[in-house]
Amino acid sequence: MDYSIESLSLDKLQSDCLLVGIYENQQLSPAATTLDGLCDGLLSKFIARGDIKGKNAETLLINNVPRAGIERIVVVGFGERGKLTRKLYRKALAAAIKTVKDSKVKAATCALLDIEVEKADISWQTRQIVEVFNEGLYQYCATKKVDDKFPLQQLRIAVTDSLKQQAETGLQQGVAIAQGVDLTKQLADLPGNICTPSYLAEQALILAGQHEKLDCEILEESDMEALGMGALLSVSRGSRQPAKLISLNYQGGDANARPIVLIGKGLTFDAGGISLKPGQGMDEMKYDMCGGASVLGILRAATLLNLRLNIVGLIPSSENLPDGNANKPGDILTSMSGKTIEVLNTDAEGRLILCDTLTYAKKFNPEVVIDLATLTGACIVALGRVPSGLFGNDDKLCDDLLGASEAACDLVWRMPVWEEYQELLKSNFADLANIGGPDGGSITAACFLSRFAEDFRWAHIDIAGTAWRTGANKGATGRPVPLVSQYLLNRVSA
Ligand code: BES
Ligand code: MN
Ligand code: ZN
Image 1 (tube, rainbow, N blue to C red):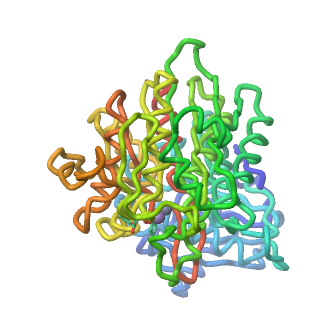
Image 2: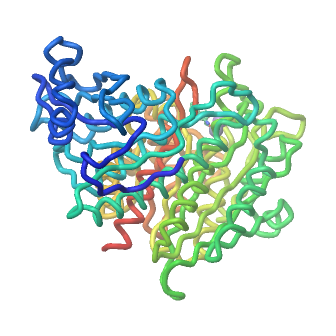
């Protein structure tokens, strides 16, 4: 897809498909009003007939426009004027792209920047148009023929001259984030027999090869052995695929600036190990690498934005399978930190691969460490599939992430990591157990991680409920790439 900004006035515009907005009670947007005048009241006629009311996410496709240069018009409803939230703007845009897609046009022009959105500026609106449209156009095709590939190739976003610069900024951010999201989704949607730890490592090397400021190093099991990563290695012992610890280094900032370290859980398939999961829905555990795929997507966005920051991406990647050599309940591991861990449930493997990676992160002298992980089913029980769970040991970092999540419309909700919960991780035989029992499962998982994050400012984002959609529309979402990209953008301007 090619996205661009266009500052032509509507009377000179040529388009296969022009998108304009309407508010509730059939109030046309400024662009729609102009267009109505240029087309002898065509829109007014449709409105008078009651074909569109202007409710949020309503759309009307008008073919056969009696005006040279404009082939089709899509009228998009935004709901009550003056009450349009950022969420509702995105909702209407999603409906708009669906209608454009169904109309099979090759190029479209979007005149939806004149819609008034609460707490939003032109740059934000432009960015959302790109992100939401790109989301609507995503199609998985790695292992399935798509005979009906969407023909839309080009989207021009119309803006008045005075706002062009703001729109360009939003466009650049939108395109970078959309490309990051695309990479994350493509990797996440791949099956476990293709997307193995070795495959992820190759993709990281390819990504690094595309950007001068991005380097990649792959730590092999022998390297992990030498580092004493007993927790990480215990998980991969049950798998025939060798584990990889992917280490990416983006040097966009001053040579001596402390890096932001991003850690992504990269379980390319989680069967639970000896504590085997039930069969129902187990295929979805191919998505247990979404944290890792998000780190790759975020780094892709960061390089495209040329962010003036140093960022380290760490992706511990393994499978979790039952095997004669796999972890057994009751086994005791020695982590890289020296802390011993009693494995009470082999399905709580994410924290095992993450804890050694957190310890490893210390060597980068991080400014902050943020881990992204499909860590617990309990997070879905607690929060559903709307926000990701946010945990951390630093209020400023958590507040910054909350703020970024709202701006990016990629929500998180903060959960406690209080010491009272640490009690639940006590073990008679090791420094800590890898599970905390049935209560507060996403919190005890975070508490476990916190024990390996004592030496730096740290946040943990549990994306179990948000990284992919379940059910008929199953597929990766690319979350939390927009949120973390926004956080990084905010860091640059701070
Ligand atoms: N990858 C899963 C968490 C998960 C489950 C994410 C379902 C999304 C949907 C994780 O490794 C896991 O199995 N966690 C266990 C922890 C339990 C054994 C304490 C869980 O959530 O059941
Ligand atoms: Mn598991
Ligand atoms: Zn898992």
